[in-house]
Length: 370
Image (cartoon, rainbow, N blue to C red; front, side, top):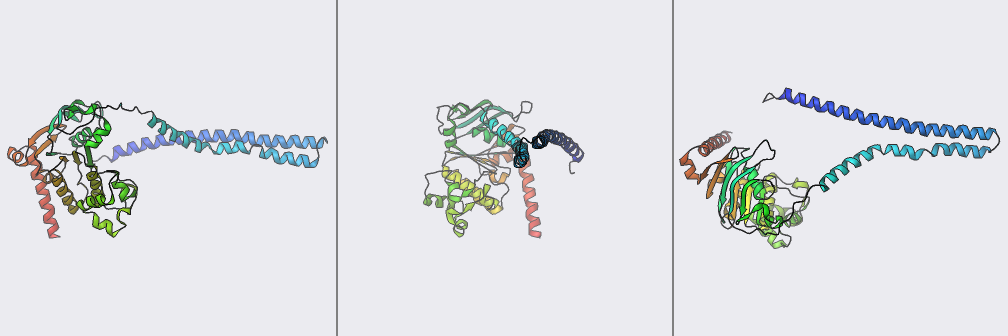
């Protein structure tokens, strides 16, 4: 309604509903045809058996008990055929499931390189990438991340920030240009070694069903209880878990029984246990409360003292302390430098900063008034 797209959506829904109706009627007609054929055979066969038995009984070739047994058996004889028809929908569900399974099994596996990923400078040179051939997301991106540096990537939604993060973790293949890690081309590195080198913490990091201990040990399966409690203390989640069942606190699928801030803290604790040289935080503080955001940002800043940290954030206040800030727009880097230098330079960064400051000041004033 807001964007006056309700008529377009109504037409799309009508088109999908009509398609669904046609498919449903096709399935029903097929089922009804099969039922008619099987019922004709079953009931016709049973009737024929009764007629033959009655004729043989009338001719005196079989007795009454024999005739009665044949009548009963003629009905039972066709029951398996009718049962086969009842498995029609079961078979269709099985075929649909098998299609998905074989589609997964038929996916090509990427050949694994033996070249190990080593720490060092990360460099993007003239990188281009597109999810669809006609719509390019990255358009000649140049970036450099020095070892032990704290770098931020900022920009409006849809400018390509998360695509850069996916490239650096090896999730997006088929890019143009060059992406190197320690001088070696990223596409030629062994996937397992790349995962040991680069850790991604996103705003929707997945937490599997199980216990807190099992979830954390995905970051380091050799970590003992003492190490787990240490990392929980760092993310300020230990007190909450001690009040529950400790490391045996159960988690539902995607930790649905925790708050958003608690889920994000737990995901961060798992990432810290992984202890890789490079950490990428992709909107890791979005959709959580202010207290959790401040705690996570404090931990990110302390981590940047010993690791290579790349922060992708829509909130420029979180990016301000970075050693270097890349400002992206429409798949390109339009500005780069420190927070102070970018403000002095003006342009997109200054505009975004002033707009955010005005909005935050408005929210603070409104909250104070309430």
